[in-house]
Length: 293
View: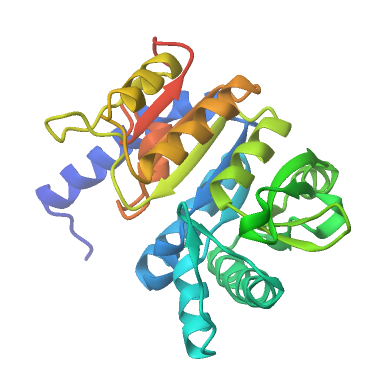
C-alpha cells in the first residue's frame, strides 16, 4: 500500500504553487531570444555545469530561444602553463600572439565548447558547438596592436544562429573571430555576447559570473539599475574592477536594442530560472526602464 506523509504532501503542494507562479513568466518569454554568457568558473565545477545544462534544457523546453557564449580563461591558463608558454596581460587583456591564439582556439573551440555541448545534450537538449569564425559570424577589427591578435566585433552575421534556433537547436559559441586578413582573433567573451545579443535584438543578455551582481556600499545586492545610474556608480567608484567591463557591456547592448541585461551569480543553483521565472529575480538587472520588466 502506498502512503503519503503530511510533509511530503506539503512539499508537493508548494512545488505546484511554484510552477503555477512561474506560468506568467514562461508565457512572457515564449519564443524570446535570450543570450547567455557563462564564465570559465563553471567549467571547473562539474555540479555547476550539470545544473547549467539542465536549466538550459528546461528553458528551451518552455519555448525560449537560447544562444550561449562561453569563456574559458582558467582552462587556457592551465594549458599555457603545461606547455611552458608565457602569457602576459595589458590592462587586464591577454596578449595574444600567434602561438597563444593557437592554444586559445584549441582550448575554447576544441575542449571547453564541447564540455558545455555535452552537458546540455546529456540532459536531453540539442546543443551545437560553433565558434565565431563559423559562417562568418564574428568579423572583427584589431583591438590594439599591443595586444596582438585580439579582436573587437565590427560586423555580425547571425544567419547561422537563426538557422540553428529555428530548427530547435541551441548554439554554443566559442568567442573567436575573423580578422581583416581572415586571421583568427581572440575575442572577449562578454563583448562577443553583447554584440551578438544586439544583433539579435535579444530580450535579455544574461552575464553569469561568480558574484551575485552589482553591490552597494554596504555590500548588498542592487537588484535594478538604469544605464544612467550604472555610469554614475562607475564614475563614483562604486562599481569597480572586473564589474566595470560587464556593466559597460550591458550598457552598450541596451543602447543597441537589447531590452535588458542581467548580471548574476552562476554558482547559485538554478539562478537563470530564478531570474526569469520569479517576481524579483536573483541578480542585477540593467535597463533604460526603471520600472518592472
